[in-house]
Image (cartoon, rainbow, N blue to C red; front, side, top):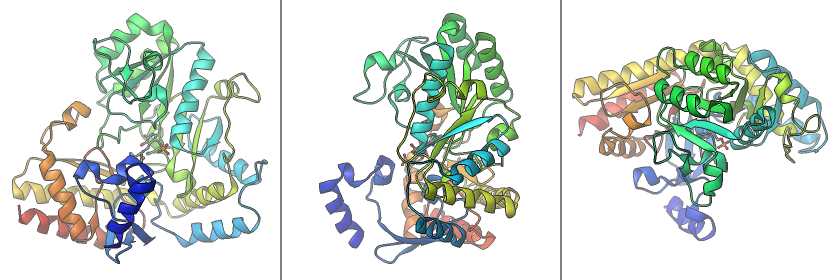
Length: 424
Ligand code: KE4
């Protein structure tokens, strides 16, 4: 198999054979396939096998793969230059659409990844407040900057421990990691450290522990406590921004963060990130203010054109209604299959994002997620892959449906899952 040969070669040149760990299929104890091409809801691997794709490059491809609108826009733009390192009009258009669509964003800065967006937002929050501590939540992932690769401290309310080799304990000690959906612990920490806390960073809907929802009132109370102590809220919408609604989860939840991190969908599949929010905070950024932040390719014309085309297409097609419809179709179909099979399960779904858990209790946070029966997950993943359905290769990831997925694709996928489960 060509994939196997490529992977063997890749491992001699690239750590683990991949440029991002999740692609190595470690969570499903197997080896990845290599993609040859992708179009619409489908991908084809280098051995000619086709799959219906429920990852969509981990979120960016909300129109499906290689939509003609985006590929032709990139082609046209590239004729005028690939990167300038000089301001160009596409950056202004992208900033305008983000400011127009995302309720809390008055000014925005482009980056080249979600990691850069959250890393920069944290530095900005620290610069604006003059404080050093930040709070994050277990199971929430915001990219791989040092301040965010921090696990909960050994003591209930102590500062963090490094969650990766190479993160100095001194860095980790500035991050407090708490359980998500636990207001009591949040209040306790603020009561003790409130005056030192620059910001709380939280995923809008945590989607790196499967798909977790804030309990009723959680976000509102989090906003109230942070305001009380003068701490900022950084709302990480890298995954949910422009995917669940024009204004993201903050529109759905009527939530007003101080800063928002964005990525994925706004790049149309090209490298991108962004962070934005209150103008008084954003104007602390160089070259206006003292907080330094930069990027050679930030706002580059191809990523801007690809992202602008994608956002305009979403708007033109009234995308969110359809994405919610197919998301619901998937969720209901999954529940029916596993109910009839008598297997404990829970399906969390919102719009085009969904996650199947093999346990039957409310998913409060990542502690619940780790209780599930992972053997079922692996059997389902490999059984579906064999039958041409590519689900997330990790129980901690969320599935993504695109505008290219038809109702028939969802039905076909559910038929595959039903046939795989029938053999259990
Ligand atoms: P990137 O640096 O990977 O562009 O974005 C980091 C990031 C920030 N915030 C949230 C909520 C995210 O989900 C991510 C990245 N998401 C993962 C998938 N869960 C990217 C896949 C990967 O790491 O290869």
